[in-house]
Length: 417
Image (tube, rainbow, N blue to C red):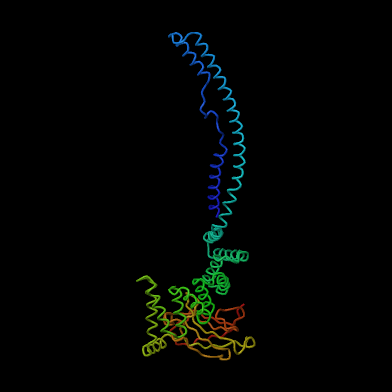
């Protein structure tokens, strides 16, 4: 930021210097074309003497011409004196006027420059660049985390004073989403939607974050947003992708395939993205063939399945209601927090035994059989929110083999602060 302002101020000062030098330059009378009258007089006398010697003029005629020439020179001297007085007066006026103009421009130009930049430029980018520079200069992860928190705090404070700053809300949305802080990302994207609710990109961002706050599920409000985005931009690649995911989660596999087939035509031929979408289409098509799918599911379930016994600690019996939701799910060891496989039950069902396998996968392209190890979680949520919240009861277990034959016990015995 300092370098930017240093360069900007330098350009302004150089411009002011050039303008002021031109305005304050004095006009030198010596630059005016003048003739030295004394030289002309002496030259004319020599010419008269030569004319007399050559008999061209008589002495009387020479005296008469000499007298007339003296009178002419006297008149010219008077005119010259008057001209110089007028010129001196004019120069004084010009000098005074130029000084006033120079002072006026000295104040006006910087003020105009900074005001124009604030209205037409990107002053916010300077503040953001300063924060990002501080983040990049951090030497260790702890310092980087502090820098990120500082950046987000400053950005949130600024948005309180500038609630209609679209770029600011977008940056805050993306930052929280990247940090997987989806409740905060949802609050930010709510404001983004308030300002640009007719923008397909914003609608899809909103749908994406809503799904993230609900374990990656697109049904409900996210589906409505996706439909509106595709109405405004039918060929939007993200819209087609999300629409396919939503349809697949609803069990409408044929609809999902149609969306993804449209998406394939919008992607660059041979690109990695296109190849990946074709893979999803192939997997989805296999699920539409009952005999093949049954065989695939049976084979996968036989080798890749996790049997889980879920119970609730007696210490929390009085803290729950029979209708409270119980989520049992598996997540990737390293990767996005979206569950690979999930089962939803109620507290009234506890204790219970469930099996997570490829049939409980949320996505056809991300099944339990695609992972050697997973993280297991069982959690009680009073409001049915798939994202953990303060007060939820939970138990976690890491590095569980997906091909284990053992029954994994999960006793819910911890309360989230």
